[in-house]
Image 1: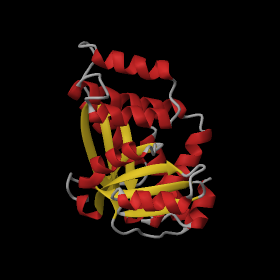
Image 2 (image 1 turned 90 degrees about the vertical axis):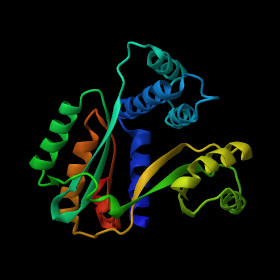
Image 3 (image 1 turned 90 degrees about the horizontal axis):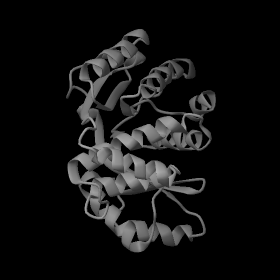
Image 4 (image 1 turned 120 degrees about the vertical axis):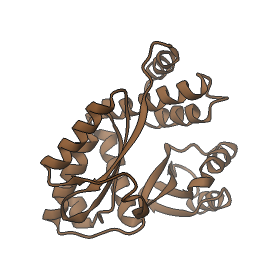
Length: 247
């Protein structure tokens, strides 16, 4: 899990400075659209929307942008988005799992397949790689002025399955079935996560040389840049050397 966490940390730090913040907002707006279509525009009665709003705040999305997204999603003329996934291999046998939200399946399939083909990967059939990943709840919580030991105890009592500390953050993992309970426990304790989402955590990771690892990360980054892609997961071990080369 350490490799995945290290990658999550890198992405969080990059995101704080990144000119691609519009891409982050685009992903959140799509989450909001799906949530509103499913359960209505009131976060108090729509848990999925409440979670999307929480992530929007964690990404520093302006309030007016957030409200416009909710209002637009409430419009019956707004196209519905479909969730689709892809499974395949990057160079050197690294497993890659891609999650998308799209209003045009044909476009998304063509784009993702093209990226895999051009960058030395290949798509597999859905279900072929699921056993390599486990869905878990993942929460990024800034420690701030809190006592780290006291906060850690609160998180364990709230149902944390695993906790990792990096710089000023705790990364908290829960079983998928405990995700909602952890969200509720954090709300009751007055602890606000900067992000809370279900992620696919690799059961094992594979270490490659820096040169080979960068080829894999080029494919991952290129897929992430596609407008229809919400998340990309892989089982590449992010060593300190590879992390330094990627920064």
